[in-house]
Length: 396
Image (cartoon, rainbow, N blue to C red; front, top):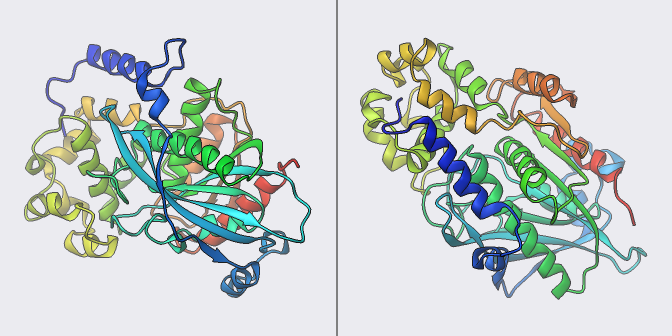
């Protein structure tokens, strides 16, 4: 994969343009005033009792510290954010509010929860609040939870900017703004603590958001702690692991990255990267109407059949320098957080290899909580442990 007309000075220009949109300054732009404003709120909130939440999770042998304490009232909403071109757009999500008549709690922390990889536009929290179980779970443990759908999902047009750092973080930052506004409208008192968590793609989104908040939004937000889980924090490392292997059981993820990056950057023609018939299929598979399983069934797990020999040779050798620079630009393991961060990952995970969290924890000097299981089976243990860990920071 090559990038046409993309020179080093353009990286500098892109960075300056990004800084223009996100750095707080005295002359606040119209975009900064509008971003995070609520456009609409669903008229029929969903009410779920703590009893039903515990019944729903009863088959996972839930830790007592993670069992539901609060009933939850969930709302869907639409708000203003910016897309990867810096244009103001509508985005959607859901807000989950803990409710109790018997518990004497006067204020709650705010937690932003980020969903795993979602291919279908309507399989998000704004369409059905049950589409994000971890948000419901966390809210029942005493967090006001905001769950943004992300760009390209829910009401948002275009392709989802999958594993793209700024495209991941901006709608989260504005969803947090919207959640603060909504909580005030609902007379829900927040205690000024802010937490972040997410699994798989959500782990990447969590790390990207925390990084950008501390680098550019520290005057507005202070992250109390974040819990990224099983995410591809180093995109270069993930690409090398996948492309250097003989097979990869989830080619739908890698196709997603390519289609997202094609939308954001000027890439080579698709048939220079992917072989036929997959090159012809890819543009139609990521329109938001196909599930991950359907996309996977349309591709192949054999790397040498999916990608062209020339592309593989160049990427695994000394070529594809522009692509490697773009991948590096979207790594989110190259900073030192001020707030506590704990990684969570399944040791048998080969979808997002466990070694990524190992190297990230070493590079960033972070603690890593490891669990037996692959990308699917380790999800519940990681999410449960993350909620319990974040609870230790809650102040009333």
